[in-house]
Image (cartoon, rainbow, N blue to C red):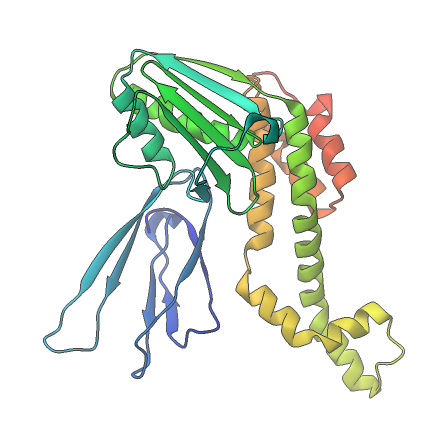
Length: 310
């Protein structure tokens, strides 16, 4: 892969995996060596939205004559989104921020741009306008898009999704030397609601990580004392569920970092839309995340002192 992806292990796999460092630190190069009786291999990956490129897979079956099957999968900028079968009525839509792009582009160009940004977009558009709705499979946020000749409108609960759309479409328009005008309306309430939605995921993952760190120490105490009944109930629970905790952590080792990345992007994009540079505040945000509580995070997001003018 020429973009960073997280390879998630599957219990059904018995292949031996080896990872090779990629020059420059970008992308992933991994080899899976299957045992002789293997005729099926399941691979699961997690991408970070905003980073896009191609994932190339080469398969060498154990047959004669030697042959190789090569397949390329496009990783779209908003790869974690899936298209809904039908549009939701307006009264069912949550509060969303909006992005409007206008300029001298054709309907075909607008459709091509949307397709380069999002998965499951039809190759050809039927009609004079395009209307699609997508849902983020990880966060559950919506992204609605409607476009026609000279105008494209996007709405989402996630301003990061809108920031990615803006970046991709601006790049596409620049490549074709098409002048565009961009108007945005960021509703701060959507940011608060999204942080509240992420909170249970962060809380659970932090708890899981802490439990994993405690397992060896608790096992040492139990071995030395020959009895662990004096331990607090929450510690006894960790010992009783050791295998389940380890298995769950093994299945998603990078999930906490992934969630931290989502929050960081949300913070940066919030202020970027308002023309402010908060790159210097990233270290402060990391400290808040390391000593996490929703109240502290909301306070940090809304603190005027974090907003440094460009």
